[in-house]
Image 1 (cartoon, rainbow, N blue to C red):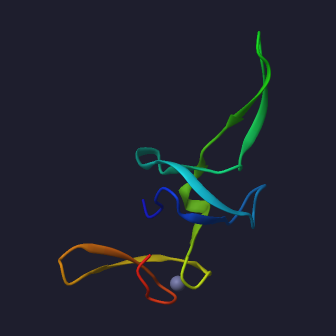
Image 2 (image 1 turned 30 degrees about the vertical axis):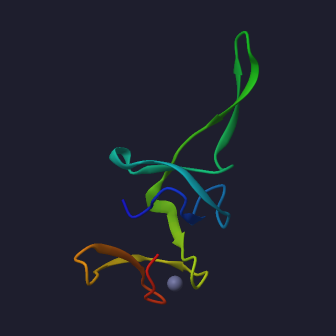
Length: 96
Ligand SMILES: [Zn+2]
């Protein structure tokens, strides 16, 4: 999973295409993520009335928005001088 909690992501296809929002939860094992305010359905629950249900989105249709250059980018990795893996923006090459 290249998407992390609190990333800004752009939705690349589907009903919410083009929207940008923050990742609120990542389901790594399923390859899905919850994105703030996106994919919310109204559901009629007996005894509770209509409640909002949020469904996770497939990570494959989410693009990470680089906080440095503001572009939707692919995420790459580089090893820094301390031997740790950094996530880098493939557009501006900055660590994100
Ligand atoms: Zn960038």
